[in-house]
Figure 1: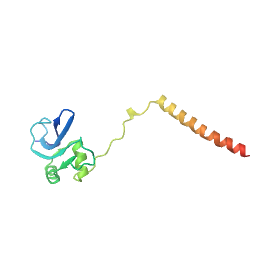
Figure 2: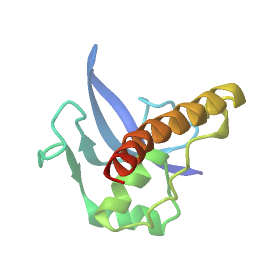
Figure 3: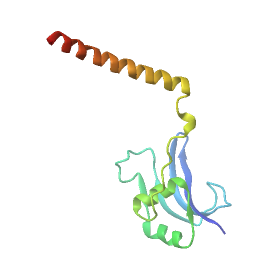
Figure 4: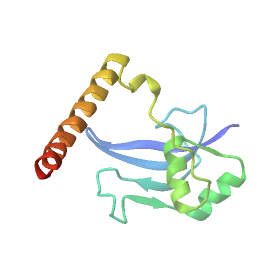
Length: 128
């Protein structure tokens, strides 16, 4: 049995509320679970203490038994100090500007630098 620590969605339409549960990986997202170990309410502000409630001793117990947390739950557990912080991925190369856009940006930067240097050079000649 592959155990997962994951979010189970509840709440109304456009008002999500998640339970952090330990479940068999073959069960559906909102289906049968083994134990509820916390809650997550994304509608609350990040500073609110009730945004994330986690039973850390139960979470560490299930991690020792081999339960695999999902990506979002891994972030929660790393904030609690139970697992190592996952490596954040950089933005993909696909989203970078294309060659022509990069050339235009370099040309704009060069023009701005030249415009900034021209008044300074004119002031230097005027003083001489």
